Length: 343
Image 1: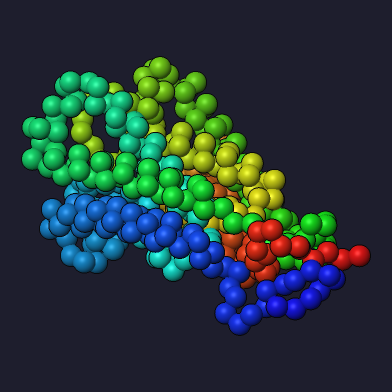
Image 2 (image 1 turned 90 degrees about the vertical axis):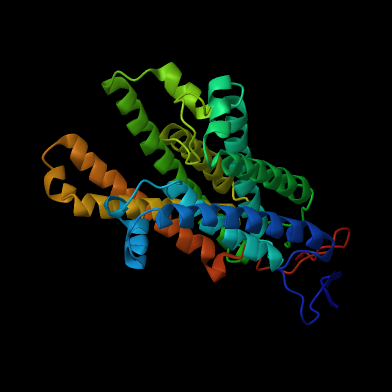
């Protein structure tokens, strides 16, 4: 311990500002185990789905990035593929007691809770409920849903109270300090997320107004899994579209406010969106859409927004993983201790 401006600062060897406080180790351990278990269950479904086809290992890898290369209909969709990897990565960070895992794990839990609640609403429909009994894999699917709900509730219950006092000064942060740098980077991420959300809302409104879509049925399918009448572990396009817009808006607003505790959530969601955007770019390339896109205004706008999404999500991933962001770059101050200030 050393004195600085009348206060005390912990500079003991081994003091790691990126590591969770000892009193929260149990919460991070429970989070890691829950997400690892559910991520493993999703991975088992992914391997089962690819095993049903007659493709090779290379076909398996190619199908992960080329939507047109999948040898057979899969049990899970690309969103689940991406989140399976994300859950396992966050589980590893949680087991390693890294503070950056907290917001990423909370975002994962909220995603799982939303999926579980949607499925719960669908189970009120008797016809849909009976499919779990009639389908050979129905019991396994229901068990996976139940595991997801349990994991979400445990993670939310243990991590929401596991707050830590951020390192920093009571006074305004220096303009060139790590806190100020992170706030600038965070606001850039927030702007990128919010612009992406605006583009998606615009495309959604265009789709609704230019087609004979039943808006009531569409919105109901977001919260009710029984609308389409089929048992499917893969989230519907309606759910993923609305869910991604909500996530972009919420995370964008929080990032715009310079919140220091959402770096993990920004990184997680941007990485998932980047993977899905790369798949889209590969699909546009193999279908020769690029050469025909500028023949219509809609095609040109589609290319522009896709390029923006690719650049924006890449930028957020880079900014959120940067060592100089300073999210946890300061020294942890024990709660109740005096924080050094400059006079």
